[in-house]
Length: 295
Image (cartoon, rainbow, N blue to C red; front, top):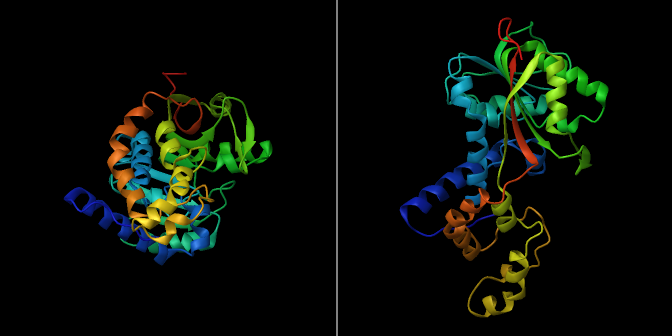
């Protein structure tokens, strides 16, 4: 969907970036595949840019990836691998069980020093302790069987020499939501400890306030716009403002909506530190137990 932003230097740069990202995404993937395989969705709005960058910051890739060997399990089209490549890892590998996605990843990462291949995540083609860092984003939450989850935990820990980063949606109590199994942080801690990996750091993506304001779920903003849309239409806005907001992930479809988002984002982001989340997208960092430094 096309949109424009206020014509100053900062927003012109943002618009240019968003258009390049959108063109790159559309060139690589059919539109129906976007939701299913993008771990770090191509940002289309100022809020998307903020959300993506905040998650990347939580991963702390510079500290753990720079100069080290890194593997991502379930790499999709390679959007996270591209971020990791910025920190000059010594070796960078990605695996995914879907050949089509691996083909997309190879095209997407053709300018990066990364090896991407098709592999079964429950039986990885690597020796023990092959990688300094293993990253898994959004894989466990789609594994419902305890038996299969145990296999995945085993393989992740088997090939990791020192660090494992798990990025999964968690909940205060285990539950199923939107075709995902949300486990507790304690469950991940318990399962990883069985493999002698200890939880060192937990971060939850705190975007409660901004998500409420800038997405369609459980907020009145889009409905307020629709109620006043006849007036907006009469004073010169396009007919698109007359459409009812029916899609949860609907991209703002007017210049006014994009301008409001860009202008209010600095204030809204400050509220994220006030309304803290206790569940949601969670970054968990685990370290292998050391011989003389147990636990």
